[in-house]
Length: 157
Image 1: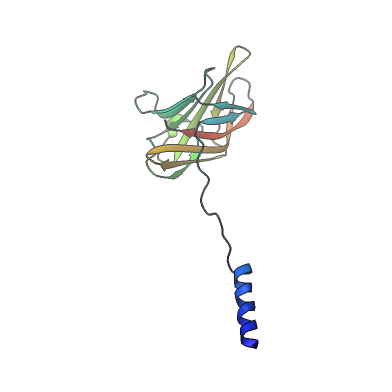
Image 2: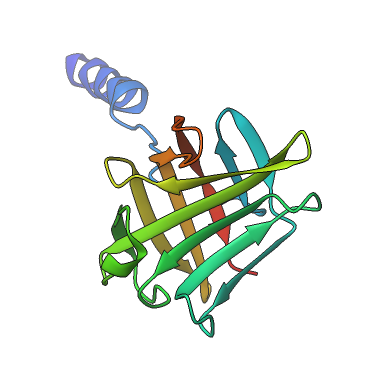
């Protein structure tokens, strides 16, 4: 009788405490490009990679109001990789990227460029598309001297 009680107690204990489920599945990426700069969020209606530009290869995303973000790379990302934001487009190589963000404010164009002093950038290849996520990339408005950050995600269409 003691053996039966012991086995029942063992089964109850294992059932209650021995099994747990964890979700190790990463969250699904966003379905639309978006970025936040200087506290304002924009949603890209069009996002594409341009490798034919004379000024370099870049991801470009823009909305209906012509608010734009460019992320320059030395070549289109083909593997999952982290990048370091830099301040000069001329310094691009396989591990660096360069940001420009332009927005319209009171009928004037406000442009920010990456300062090269912080932030995280990663490219992920999923189903043949490039997803670039970035966080707290430090940006400088060269005209006003205002420093801010940019964060978001660009999704190749």
